[in-house]
Amino acid sequence: MLWEAEYASKVTTTERLLEIIQPGSCVYVESGCGEPQYLTKHLIFDNMSLSDVHVYTSVPLRCYADYGGDFGSRFRIQTFFVAPAMRSAFAEGQADHLPLSTVGMFKLFHEGYIRINTAIIQLSRPNEEGMLSLGVMVDIMRTIIGKAEKVIAQVNRHMPVTNGDSLIPLSDLDYIVEHDEPLVTFSQEEPDPEIIEVGRNVARLVDDGATIQMGFGRIPEAAMHCLQGKRNLRIHSEIITDTVVDLAAGGALASREDGVVANAVTSSLCIGSAKVFDYVRENPEVELQDLSAICDPALILHHERFIAINGAMEIDLTGQSCVGLGDPTSFYGALGHAVFNRTAMFTPGGKGIIALRSTSRDGRRSRIVPEFTDARIGIITTQSDVNYVVTEYGSVNLFGKSIRERALALITIAHPRFRPWLLEEAKRKKYLYEDQVLPPDDAGFPGDHEEVRFFGEREVRIRPIRVTDERAIQNLFYAMSKDDRFHRFLRHMASLHHKQAQYLVNVDHTKSMALVVQALGDKQERIVAVAHIAPDEESVGRRVCEFAVMVDPAWQGLGIGTHLFESMIAIGRTLAYEIVRAIVWRDNHSMLKVLEKAARPMSRSADSHAYQVDIAL
Image 1 (cartoon, rainbow, N blue to C red):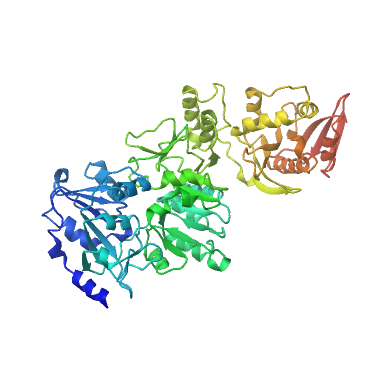
Image 2 (cartoon, rainbow, N blue to C red; image 1 turned 120 degrees about the horizontal axis):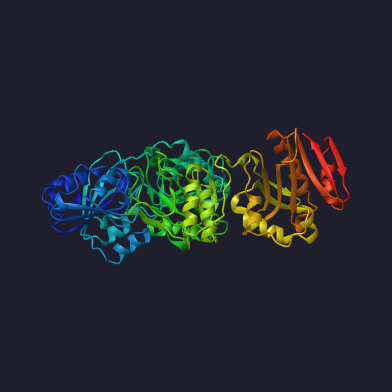
């Protein structure tokens, strides 16, 4: 065959290539798990004839003993992403970071802002047609190959052939060095309990049938682990890891057998172990595409329920998040993070999720901060692009929220130890009202009281009240009729100002409790009902709590009040109350019917205007 002769004519040795890289030239080296280790050793690190060479790469995973001599006299590494193995090199000024997005990377080389003299890549063995595969690292390599003056390929039988945009013709190659060696592997550090909880909270935001983009790092990895049990998921992500293989094995991913036309997995880079390398090998369910296509907003917008899951080192109280060099165990770089996060929000049912621990690993610093703490920090998600933020203490949706609402929401998912400090800092910056208060430090969020259910054909979420519900409670109040307001507060109220509403949303979950009913499918996250129990301070000898409820007039008659009352009976018993008491105006017949349905020992006394109804627990 003609290709075999062409292939044989291009095979050479590294010794014959040492002079290919000229002084002052620019070299691009394929990186990640596709790094041609044999070529980089002989042509870069052991090549003492190099002089002032810039070595560009995208995701270097290995730690190197040599970074090119003093001030890059032999070579200097220029990379778009910083993994933990290379953090010390950047911290000591031995390498350069280019803070560009994936789109920026493509533009940089495609339009010739940087001219690549030599590309050093790794490929699979040729197939029957003489085509070689980029395998696990398609990345932007097709662009680099097309623009480079010379292309040197290490052909390695360990590199799998993959579907998609990975095939390279022999005509694109100038030199071939045959050398078989295991691919670079990478494994994330085992997640600690806090990161696992962050992952669980992220997974709660992911619905069946969603399309997932995962960032690179321990937190996105933990979130992917927690998606086991989901169904019909698809992956559209720059990077996939071993966790995608686990999701496929567990039945979480869609397949062509389910009638899905598109691939279950579309990616550009595989970073992990032989597990993911074997999974993508000629797998018809997986396509590895050019990185510019993966991050194309137009293609992302074709999906429904696109969920972008990315990490951050810190987030400030206005909602902008960052990565930085402060944590030697984390990853640093933009890649497609901002594009995915921004575009996901505009797909039907989509979400952009920024997930992070509430504190540094040693617990000494809050990762939710009044302002960023590291001068070398890079802001990735701006105030205008933030959507969901997740820590181990819960999640908040910041989209469309004011700075005041964002600051308060973020404080509620900060570590409890730092919440008082953050509250005072937010007041100092005039983000919050001077009289703003928070629930007690020990008032954890009782997630076991959260449920999704239907009343008639209307789907709702019932959950404990949050301090961030203040405006929603005000909206509920103003939706009530004059009589309904009177029945709830037993006095005429024309308004519910901040000072009054704040009191209603601050409960400690140990003596007082409140549940809200939230309409699902409502972009305003509208609260249509709320029920409270609080201690009756005037009762002596027995533990008594008072019950009160508000239900939006448009949602009355569906059984919501009855359900909330039954729930509060159960909660009152859990909080060790002996009696639940309700003060009901004589003409509040609907509330009296709710109480009569309780089917529990009840006593009722009356004055000239109202009944006091006591239900024994």
